[in-house]
Length: 49
Image (cartoon, rainbow, N blue to C red):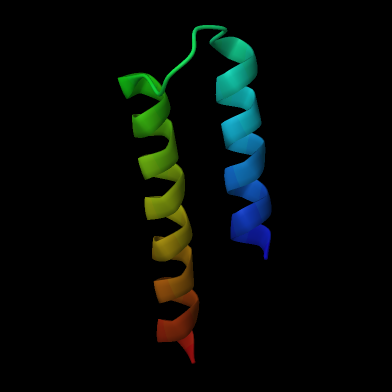
């Protein structure tokens, strides 16, 4: 749930900062970093159990 909210806010931030249509490489990198960070956090919390 938190990950979806984070991705949605990142997507809105990328759209507001970049008025050109399409999906530029910088936005893709931001999304990839967000997904990677979320997966990393989930794996760390799973390893603690």
